[in-house]
Length: 347
Image (cartoon, rainbow, N blue to C red; front, side, top):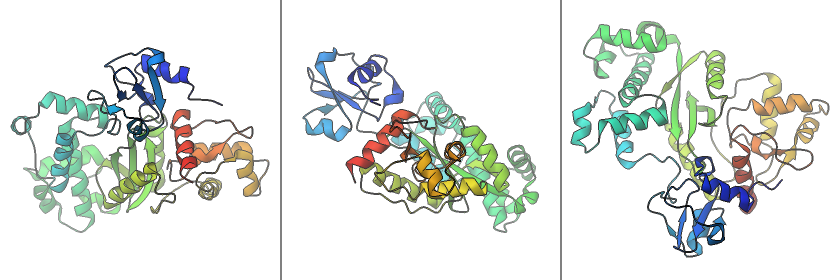
């Protein structure tokens, strides 16, 4: 099935469709500039454009990156000044920034609020609060006293800390010693942002933020792992980001990330089998069913693939229809085709 026809790509450009950002780029012959599909700077005539699978291909043909849509950056990339805010409060959760502190940094508080609301589903101040509580949770689990933790993480009173803690976790700080949390973070990729989840330095979730099942996946993980998802950072996310960057550059073919995949015995067998599909190769659901010795379980295999919570690393994008056509993918068929083309180019 031909997904990226010139008509499809040109219509995406006319509609400024951001869901295609990162999947292809267009060069405008009359200006010598190349853009993302979502760029609102211009709607060129079809005869004046050519399309490229990657930004580097447009550069190689002599095009310059557009200053408006910045096609050399990742879609929805975190602005540098916002990245600095996140780094500062992660390094020291007791460091509480207020509106005047943002203005002193040259930032408009409403702009910061809108950015966090759009990309994290909460205000900047709620984000700060979640980072503080994430840190406090871990400190208490490591044996620190509740009162000491409260003041070390920036709370002015013990009662205020306890109320805030219970409103998020549903339990008091002293009751949390036997519970766990799932660290949750946003990771930027050339195909748009992804949400990563980790527990005990093991990756249990990696999904595109547009994934419709994301909320139900978090609920299922929370129940299976008896853990609470909370915005936070861990060392695993740094390694994950580096490996994803290398994967999208075409220089990494096998991920080395510890995984935690709670599920039924059948689901785990399917997810293990997915990881045996070689980089750059594909197989059908029937191939999968036969590989596990259950040739009649094609529908069950397809359902198990759909329940995979760790995109790309557990490569369900490498499974296609028996007739060779692309079939359903939680991240969208456009992304599936991009990933397959990426791997085939770099085998």
